[in-house]
Image (cartoon, rainbow, N blue to C red; front, side, top):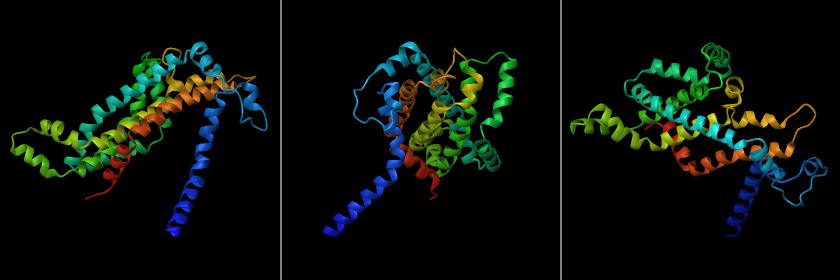
Length: 271
């Protein structure tokens, strides 16, 4: 009994040693968001202080962060939705018709750095007058989101028993009906995994938003630049804005954690 207790204690100590370096920056950001500028830069740090909401008030009232929050949410949701609408049928086709060459092409597109698309993408949208539009940002985010959906779902659908589709055909179900009624419900863990990862990419994207957005379509990562000037960095507002950006990602990850783990596991193991 004592031996098991000692093993458990050692295990939890090891876990704490591993997670503390990862959690400390997050805790520091959250704590600093409730401090004043002078309290943040004080050395040694003040751990006992009177919390203030002035940083959050400044972020939402003076810097219109509600607008940027809406922009990021709209772009992330629509880019994820359109990536699923196009990516799920594509993944089904690649998996069932063994289109390996197309699968390799999708994988190459997934592995290419996003910055390689940035300059031609900016030239195209600037020529047709579509910079600072939601259409441009949604399409640019889909450059990475769509291959990600296909890449995840091909392996997942390939693992589903083909006999289920044959049984549906015997019962008179068309291929489209089989896809909608059999494949999609069984692929729920994979779909949740792809949706979560695609949404996270779009939500945190900085590069495409920096080049293609302006005042009308500015997203949260770009809006943080408002707090950085040549003479001073408003650390309190930067920390508050960072908390606003991080919070949805943490909430979504916690809500869909079991789906993500199950989806990645089932999509990676054959048989």
